[in-house]
Image (tube, rainbow, N blue to C red; front, side, top):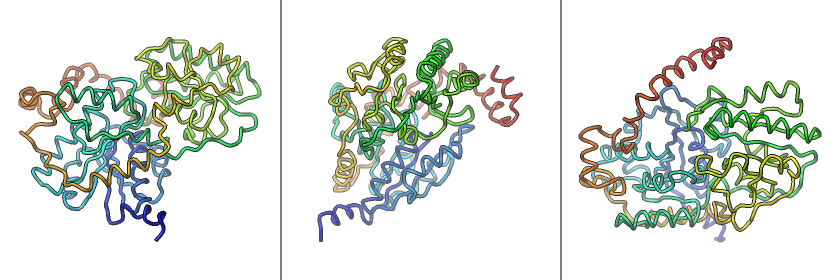
Length: 436
């Protein structure tokens, strides 16, 4: 039997399931499942929808296109316990493709669901993007997983320091690189009349004046390069679900500008499609920048607004790509990024194989029971604090670290407005009235 044949059967007979909320986490989950299915595993993705934040058809199709052979099942987040209860003894690995808060919530629910059952699935967690804010906090949120996939050695070093300070083991972590980069190959041919694409993020930058400034700069870029399409890629439409709350829409401003500036337009095509004909990718701090660099595309990180943790562009400080729009207008198509930096910050060519090897290693041992003293891992705080949190606020207090209760009143009115808005999609005049 050939070596290739042996490798392709490493997970034959195994069953791997994933649960995910939001589109970016759904794509991450499907990427991990695709790697497992390619090795012979039976795979399923459960998209768990939240109240008033269901994924659109476009978002679900983008997730499905990552692996057409892995079925997707839609369910509610409220059904997590009933969904996972029968997995003990039948599922080999469960991927928790969730944000930090819901990773904690899921672990607490699974403790109650599986109890001291020793035949539970191995728990896996990973990241859909780069860690530029709350890095250690996010990693410790997920520290209860049996396998924690990290993007870089830098992230691993931060995690190890945090665990060491708490007297904990960091042996569950492994560097696999950013999963969305696993299958990206360098582009071999430069396209004719390449486009210039700006990739938006839902909550960056924060202030409306900053967003309007970026729109005006894109107008100037389109004017300077009339023979090239300048494309604005929204993160989502106004009615689609995303993890981060949007502070305002740039799409409407770009639409108004494009009436006179004909080579400036918006596009909802997937990032992978837009990069095929892209000659310059621009963003404030989107993960799309890494996808662009891996393909060898000229990439620019906006520096006009400064370099700050709030913007997230500090992550790219050493990449060689930070530039203001004046510099971008004068030289958009020259590749400037540092390849060494790229390999140190998420691009691990053998990351998929590292992930499979780490999973196989976990399968050699029986995972310990989740319940220990009736609380979560000690990385979430002392047993005394966790019991206090559970006694006075329940799982919501512990899963949010207390932040949920302090923000509830602040967002109550916004939630009502979003509920009304989402219910009247299609009534354009009324939607504009609510947004105005």
